[in-house]
Image 1 (tube, rainbow, N blue to C red):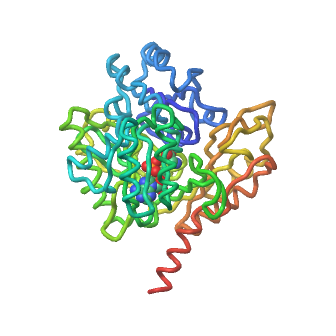
Image 2 (image 1 turned 60 degrees about the vertical axis):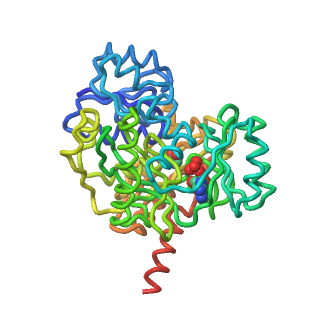
Image 3 (image 1 turned 45 degrees about the horizontal axis):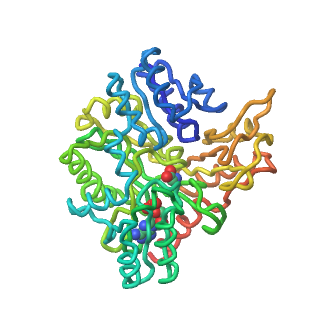
Length: 432
Ligand code: AMP
Ligand code: GLY
């Protein structure tokens, strides 16, 4: 089969790498991809959100399956358009993508179907006074969220009433554009965060893996929020029993709810969970793989990704299962200094070959270019270096040994990816 992966980050590199190994896949194409992805896929010079061009291309090039990485083309309805053209795609329709596109939609769905999540109320911009009165009456901390896609910036965990009121006003004053014209005010959930990735075919779901992300830019979870600076898999807090509970109490009821409401979810559902004393609760859904989570999840997958995705597209996941290597993976994101703010492009990365030659290490490219024989940085997040091992500690040591082979003064990474999970497991074993 001829597969087209849409997107250009390290997440899409991992997807291309995994699909290229599938016996069912003859050629992998990636639109638009990047210089690193070009080693695993044929690049197609079409932007990820150029929906019309992508539809024309998939038809003329007789693509059998389209795998959509980022959320934007999903929200723009790429999958609906491909379906109209008779092309199989992995990713939700625009209606099903509301699970990520509108927090109020997802919270209301959870409430209607008894899916465990934080208690909440929704307010429109015309209800500012009521929202302010409500927020003042809540125990602190309280969480204020813009309803729509706000590039990860629409959530405030407010420690004080003043902060909470400021967050309400900021959203209604337009700080997040249209995304903030409606807000969700919700209960603060105590616990540990972890993410679960489920491949869904509209009716059934299979676990693709679990991961824990590191969202802040700097060590010790300091600095601004980013797209993600590193991840490990499996997510240390998610025991197999908790994964089963999250599937039974959250993911499968969501699929049933979406199907019963006329918007069956087909694609990869990313459930952001809070694991508290009473078990897993839903923090948010994304309707795609995570980045960098994908880069640590897929190398653990023993089953053929091509076959699983085809099973999801054809609605036959009920008859399938996914198997995993009993290993840990840990990914470290290398970014250009200044990220998540504006960055300079064009600095040279040396030592990539040496890093890649390290034992049990994979490099996934997010924003690299070839210039002459050199690799140069072409954006904020530039690479994810993934180590794998029999333990999280071994995976971590391998990832950082490879990172240390890379000579790139203009770049930075966090040095503490996985450290908290390792400390927590040392505490647990210390306590017997
Ligand atoms: P979201 O975009 O909804 O995932 O929120 C971003 C981050 O805010 C999450 O990853 C959590 O760390 C935090 N957060 C969101 N909602 C809650 C909540 N109800 N309780 C505690 N933390 C939350
Ligand atoms: N790493 C977080 C995300 O992909 O949304």
